[in-house]
Image (spheres, rainbow, N blue to C red):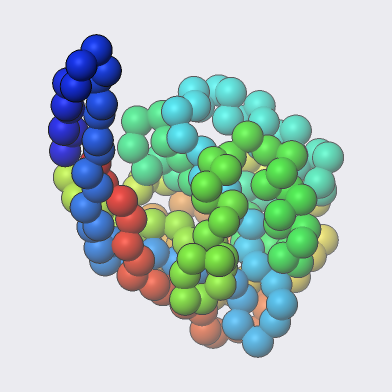
Length: 181
């Protein structure tokens, strides 16, 4: 809600935010390890621009296959189910143009990972799978079986099976709060 006050010759605008609980998201963190899957969050970007950036990141950072998910018009999540160290994820995010506030995610949520929404958010529909950008580096690292299975459960069998799956059968789903104007 927006509240405007006019005092003298000044216009003062206040935004009142209310918290909205999102029923379900998936954490990037891989249990019993110090590793994460790579999660990126992009706001206000054309799909073609995003694809160019992700292709560059795949080559420069030797990323595995990257899956693009649309969260709303011109808003996307990107994830790779390969294992990455925490510092490595921060470095990759720093090279990208992903949302700066999203990078702080591990300091704000209970699993100390980045969260990708998998359910509706207020009037927004659940995210939908768009495409995979394949990588010649896919399978060079261990890959998270739990994140793969959760992805397939949420979006269907739209991505190729893992090349170097771990034995993991656990991960974290998390409800979290987000601000809504």
